[in-house]
Every structure is written in structure tokens, then in C-alpha cells.
Length: 238
Image 1 (tube, rainbow, N blue to C red):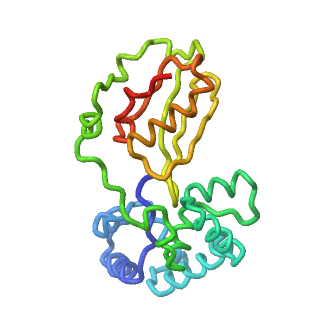
Image 2 (image 1 turned 180 degrees about the horizontal axis):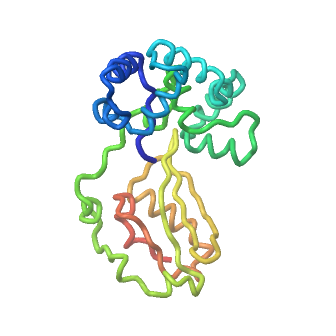
């Protein structure tokens, strides 16, 4: 998504005023403040009457922010909607997408939702409680824990070509009070789900066998990721 833009601060504007007095160009000021040339050029236009005035430019910026669409969209109704959806375990990205899909009156972006979270101190309602995601140290860390693992490169070509029904993909979804085990048939897009209290390999394997029992004749391959919950894949026999 890239680095979010940060508004210029009043101290930065004082620096711009001083550097303008030294006849620095917009590009040179940008390099000095570690800001883009475009940001500085737009900032200098806040004072079209003559010399750049830091305090006047700052007042102008604050006024523009107060009249911006995203400022007055953060109404009590929108805040209640966001908090209600977060209580159900939805992420800011999911909430913003659902608002757009349902044409919610006053829909806002996920960045604005994050600002609401910070303002109202709702970090504890985030799925990860506001903690950063820690990537796995080794890309094969999970693969090494799965016995009799067959690499995805070895599966039949017909699976990728989607020429026949019977090839499934499995996954798990983490919820507030449990997990969902999902199976999706690649061609028909048939989705099967089962709720489990934990994602041990035994529990997940049992859930998969139970879901696929009615479709035993339509199960040729199942593709899983390298999660440890799928370490019991060899026991899945229909």
C-alpha cells in the first residue's frame, strides 16, 4: 500500500520559511527536510501573495483539513458502525470494503478507520490487538514439520488447468472463539466449512474427512498450505 502521507508540522513550516529566506529552491528544501519536491511546491502555494509565512500556511492547512470530506464523514453514526463491525472481528480493510459494497451512507476508507481507532483507543478490538505481524523466519519452517509432504510442483497439470471437478484447496480461518476449516473445489467453487475449537492436526483432519464424506467420489486431490494443522493429511482417506 506504500508509505502514508504525513502532514507537514508547524516546525517544518518554520524551517521552510527560513530556507525560503535563504533563496533555497523547492527541490533543495525537500532534500533538506526529506520531503518530496511536489510537497514543498504545493506548500509554497499556500501563500500566493508573496513571501512564505509559516503560521499563515499552518492555519490554512488546519482549516482545509476541517472542511475535508474525510473529516466530516467521521460522524457518530459511522463510528458506531465501525465499532460494531470490529466487535465482530472484522479488520478495518474488511469494514471499508463492506461499506463500499453495501453503499453505506458515509462510507470511509480503511486509513480513516485506523485514525478512528487511534482517536477512540480501540486497538484492543483489532484482530491482532494492534500488534505487528511477525513473519516466519524460514520459508520452509512449516514444510519441515509435515511428514510425507508432496510439493505443489508435483501435483497433476490438470489441477492448474481446471479441466475437471474433484480438486480441492484447504485452509483455516481464525475467529474470536474458534477456527473455521474451509475446503473449496477449484472448478465449481463449491465451498465447505466446519467450525472447530482448535486447529490441531487431529481435529482439522477429522473435520475435513467429515465434510468430504458426501463428496468422496468427487475428491481427487487436496492442496494445503504448510500450516502445522495439516500435518495429518496422510490420515485423510475417504
